[in-house]
Length: 77
Image (tube, rainbow, N blue to C red):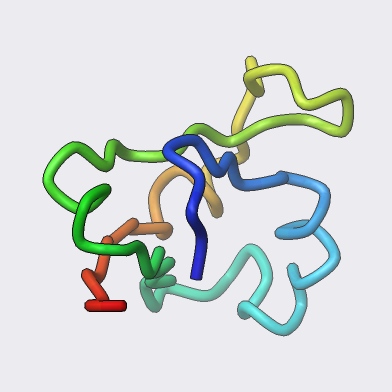
């Protein structure tokens, strides 16, 4: 769960999980869920992928760009 409107996805964390996520040859999708309180839900945007300096990633590997789908779930607190 996050209370932040902006919760970027760190590419370094995804790279650590690279083999667990199937590596380059995998073809299954990766679903990324953000659980947010009701007041953030309607305005929650697709989160950016960032590099290790927390800057927007300029080059995103295909295995990330083509397989990761982001969703937001609303929770009542």
